[in-house]
Image (cartoon, rainbow, N blue to C red):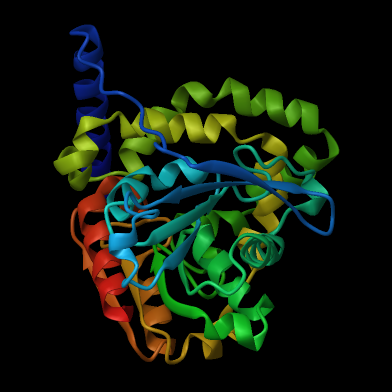
Length: 340
């Protein structure tokens, strides 16, 4: 989609949302439902992670005892939180004997962390620690979106052989195995302007937070224009105000967290994790209109992962889990059925 069409689409989506508000037909904001427990996982550097646990409706039922239990561990994207998996949690809890662990990655949501303790390698180690504390011995499925794909890849590096053997399936959505800034909008992370902002923000964090707050009025229009596409206006996603939900997720993310991850998003490369993918059933998904981590980056993952299926969805961008949740959920259900 050219820039003119993107702007026209953004204006149309913004206008439609404005009209709905004036007519008091405002879709609700989504969130995770039926959380069984919010665990606190303490890691070596003192950070405390919030990990939400959701189990399938028949978890306690003896009638499901013949089905092997499966623990699904999710990793969300940059400036998001566990809440961004609400569509997937609602669908997968309908399956027999499924347990979901959905953390707020460090610095996000209810898992605060100082800027000096932020980085993709640390989120990867955190994911492994959550598994060790909350799912020792369980069969595992790992699901990552955007920055969460690198978290999942890094987790494979941090696991020992026994833990990797328990990973029965992996799903990666809108991700990259090489640096995020190698393609798409994220190439701006290499620009002089962004490098200057990082230096100034780290030196004057309070002023950086003020700057962030001062431009939040433009967030929804930017998101509507460059992140979401036609699929957002169809199916389950049309029942919620996804654009405002996304803007609020970013709003809740502190500027120190944003700045704390920018270096990693420019430079972190998980190519060394590729050998650990071999033989593990999986799927990689991307929106054909993803400008953040373009489809070519997902194709690179598929090239180095011998048994993964590749799914590209038209009229969709970087937020597949909330933009076209039915398609994402179908792929996750198929993968679960396959490994069972």
